[in-house]
Amino acid sequence: MTAAAAVRAFTASGGDFPYGPVLDEFLRHGKHHVPPDLLDALAGCPFDPVLVDVLLDKFDKRYDYRSYLALPLLDRAEGDRDRLVALLLDDAIAFEEAPGSRLPDLRPADTAKRVRHLRRARPALDVTPTPAERLLLRCTMLPVATVHDEHLFIRVLQAFELTFAQIVTDLSAFSPEALHLAADRLRSRGPLWSALATMSVEAFQRFRRYTEGASAIQSRHYKLMESLARRPDAARLASEAYLSVPEVRVRVLAGGPTIDAVLTPDRATHAAMTDFAEALTQWRRTHYRVAVRMLGPDRPGTGYTAGPSYLAEARAIPVFTGCPFRE
Image (cartoon, rainbow, N blue to C red; front, side, top):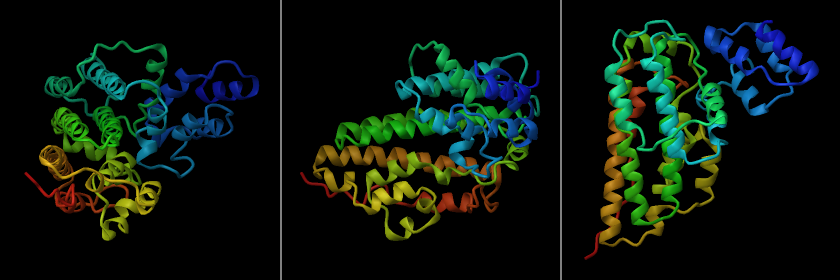
């Protein structure tokens, strides 16, 4: 029975949703090339609407950064975010170390270096995935093509997004201790950039041609993190950076609290703000360098953005308005 037929049988009679055949078909072709009969069957399927929406984002012309990374599925997952990051990176490591690849195109001859970087970035937790977590890992790996390196790309970006989400929770405590913790989280994920840098430009360009409309500029968690530190200025709020995340923009315009406004500018606060600002600035600089390597300095990014030139400007955005230092 084909995957499309299995979905239609489920729609007609119920029973267990055919996760295996459906997800295998998405991996076999890449999301951009899934056979139309399967997409048609899923469009009429009365199943988990969050999963179906992620599967049908291109079909329904709703494709963006969140659906590309299956973030709606990760956002609703229960459990500690560090645990989820560990599971995602374990999955990336297992994929690289497997003797064969379910994404066979342009498989690197040696993946040992990227595996070392992934291990360095992994939270120091002893985790074994539950059956529900194994299913989540499958449902959140939906590459657009069949290029080996896209698996790494997706898992790294998902790990970054979960890290930003945890940092938003940290910063919401509005304390120097929270700022130091957030800085440590950002630095601990730094080796993920080194892992991404092991991708070949050819591999990146091969799958990137199918990701138009999805860009990290649409990251809600990043903008929440940025706007918790300080209120963005009027020009940035009016730019594509915040127009791409309207719900975050509404929060900012409503006058949500910021660390700039809440924390008392004493010695401990100054040190904590400096620590976080340095960590985030380094993250931005590394993002820019990796983007230039993959795209070149002048090529547009996905999501209809200016690409590296936008990232170059973003490096100069102050993390905080300032923290007057008092003895």
